[in-house]
Image (cartoon, rainbow, N blue to C red; front, side, top):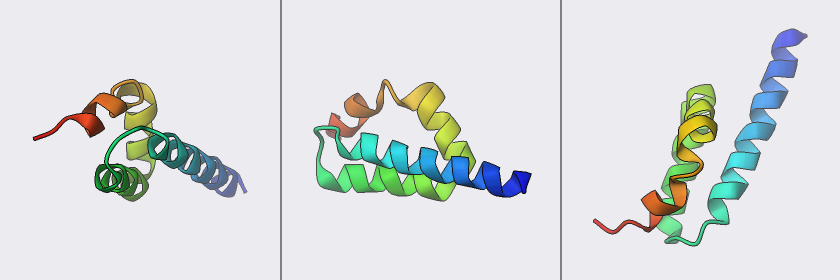
Length: 65
């Protein structure tokens, strides 16, 4: 039961992170890649996003290489 609750929390945090990334004014391809990485990396990706990348994501996605 505890595992299921943790999974539900992770699921909603992943959806929330994806929505936040989608709202950034950046090229669509870069947003989709960032969302895919967050989803594929699961908990590690969410921890990275919420504790380090959240404030920097817009700058990263708008950076041209």
